[in-house]
Image 1 (cartoon, rainbow, N blue to C red):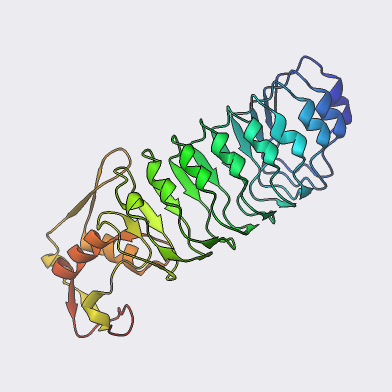
Image 2: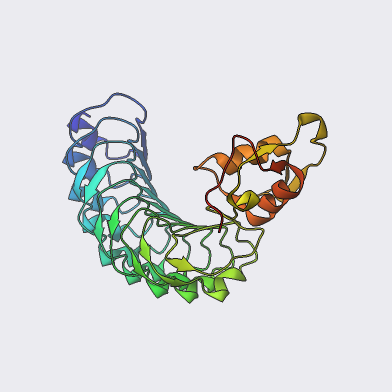
Amino acid sequence: IPSEFGLLSKLTLLNIDSNELTGTVPTELGYLTNMIEFDLDFNKLTGTLPTEFGQMAMLMDLDIRGNKLSGPIPSEIFNLAQMTMLRLDDNMFSGTISSEIGSMEELQGFLLANNNVTGTIPSEIGRLKKLTKLNLRNNNFRGSIPTEIGLVTLLTTIDLRGNALEGPIPSEIGSLTNLREIRLEGNKLTGTIPFQVKLLQRLAILTFDDAVVGSIPKDIKTLHPCRLCNGQSYHMVPPEADKDIYHENGTFEINSFNCAMLLEQKQDPDQLISANACEFIGGNCVVCGSGPFQDGTPS
């Protein structure tokens, strides 16, 4: 990236994503104080994110995901009060998240998945009242999930899987009435699922590890919600007998699935399925006692 870009003082948008750009990010880009949208995603950039980026006081959208940037995220970035979307995922960032993140009161999306960031999730995240999507998946965060997350009432997605978080799931998450998805597996969380979380009307996905106990509503998709045929092997009913269709509410519409589609979801470890769907499969789609499928030993 030419350092001379820093001389374009009136530039408000720079989009050079999805190329083969290499080298480091020039510090001179921080002189672009009128910049509103800056996209460098999906290149091969290395080195650190310049602290000078903290001078872009007008910046609303910073997208640098899918590079090889490393080192700590400069605390100056978290002082950009106009920022609405911060996408740093799929890099090699380390260090911690500065408590200055609480200054980003316009932030709607914070995506930091697949990095090496450590430390705790700052309690100041509770000041991000416009945040709708939080993705910190596959980092090295430790400590507990801050109870202040319950103050971020516009959140629709929380993805914290693949960290080293400990302690219980905060009951304050039950205040997030817009929440549709909570992914918590791959941590060290313990305790029970708060009943407040089970009452969330829009919640469609809730995943967690076995150390967390408690039942969840049958219409919520999760990991391993049931064991068909009590652990015996089974096979699918002949296609000509597959006349029943399972319906479930999707994000924007009602989705319909036949038995073959449901069994494919059931057997795919990367797919989630609800207990209601499992009950439909058990009652309409399989014959127990022999076949290629098996969900584990009898309980």
